[in-house]
Image 1 (cartoon, rainbow, N blue to C red):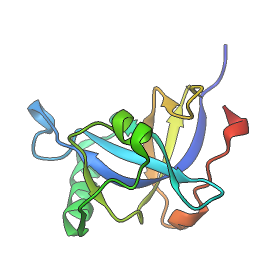
Image 2 (cartoon, helix red, strand yellow):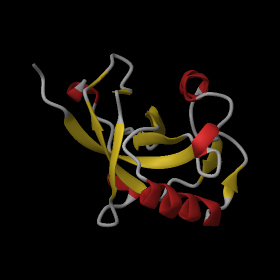
Image 3 (cartoon, rainbow, N blue to C red):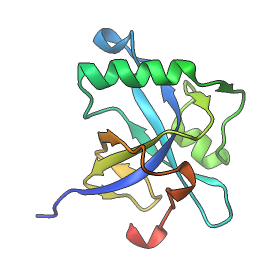
Length: 130
């Protein structure tokens, strides 16, 4: 049995919430920086939130200016989905996950915490950790 792992990712957007989550967001769209400085989509993190951090994170997201276009290449943009509201990559979160799939996305990602001690640029994509 493989234990869960954690990694840091930068929030580049969010999907709309539905049902009980409609006042907040559905998932945080996350990424990590590749060696060339571009962003690699690492998944939509929709689990692990409680009422308190849903409220706090939504307030933080609402204060961020919107980005008119996706920061991803065409393949990652398709994987992220069409209903993402994009923001500047500043907020860093710790993500708990089972594994990374061959394309580098978190498998079964769950929010752990906001990382105020790290910058977005410190979220480095490591393809060898897949």
